[in-house]
Image (cartoon, rainbow, N blue to C red):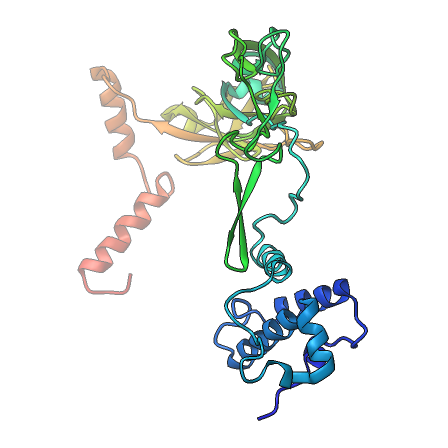
Length: 377
């Protein structure tokens, strides 16, 4: 079977320059690479054809022979494709490897300046429900790695400076050629900084940073909830060798309140009332987080679990002009340690009670009676 024309395989004209050949090869090789077309035999065959075509045409002598004699120039031992690929071919395949797997994408091949961004830090801050209701400014002290003043963050002893790493030439990364692939790794000598320090600063040991306590003010807005995160930009660890500082994240947790329970913007509280107040009705005073005292009117015959809603007396909504509600749930308290006279009065009350005075009990026992008698419940 006759072979396809190499120029046709690459989709270029016979007058194509080396740059045009390389560009066409890279584009098509990426498109038909087996790693991007798993299990596709046609793509694998196309990739092999592209490799062969570019190997021939990227070599000036082989291209001249092919232009004159065609495929016959490489038949019968005429110097066809073999295991020894040219440097230009290897370089192109290395570029394709980078594009496919992202080993160096976005990093470029420029010289490293050794600057590193500082790490982000976390600080856990516990606040009260009152703090979350009113908002506050909290003062915290955080141990932070800060730029060393003795060496101005360079890591080198005063009067000296870092030298360019001889292993990577200051790039911070080194390349190793493996066949037609080039693998790029962090420089093992300078750990990617591109510089070496012969005489390190004694104050920071060559790190360019020292740990100190830093006092900061944190603005806690109204309505924050448990787990709210506050970001302080640039207040994290200082960057190495003049790099930008990281951020500090404040994670808030709320202490349990002795009276209120919170659910989003709403507040709940449980208030015990006497049996007399539940039966005859009355009023109970409820404190609120805004410092006021509100009166809740309890109607006659109130049962345990009855809930009263106080609009707008809950928590503020974060970054909104809204306010949750306060829900007051009453629990009728059974009296204890009664006197003989009190017990006598209760027995008299029980003897004179009826379905009207205790409708729920009457209904329950009526259904229970029907159940045991086999009737409908």
